[in-house]
Image (cartoon, rainbow, N blue to C red; front, top):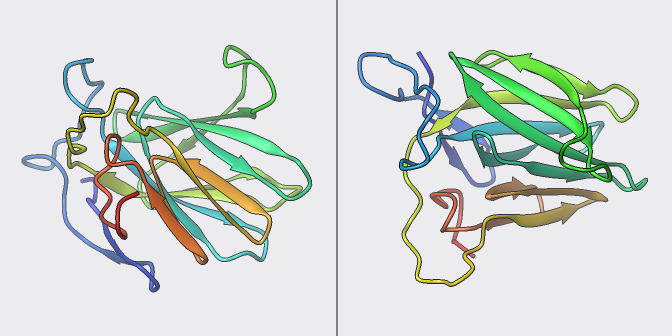
Length: 174
């Protein structure tokens, strides 16, 4: 059963719930319905953990103080997140390393920088409708030399969210 999570700003507490009916997991979605937003915790070395939401099949970015930039592309497939990690400086078509993450599981995606990613659950809510011609899809927060970009990001020094792409429940919307 996949947990739907709510997070409290400042404490990063996870409040349990479930996603879907009868414990069913969402499958690959059609282009008509919104893809589920995956809730991930990213740990970078000794820095405070960060939380992000990224829709299945879309991309988040992680930038480090030394110039390393990683593209993170998670896809929910049969109850497992397939996380493709690649150098963000390369083309979108370039191959990356694939990591499999089960619910509440984590993987080290970059041993040199001690970067790990944990899958906390799903945000099954649909994003708000917007009237913008070019709605916000990704926003970024930078703390202590670490930058994370996704549809919603919560770090120790700040928060951002794009209401056209996420539910913006961790703080005030952008």
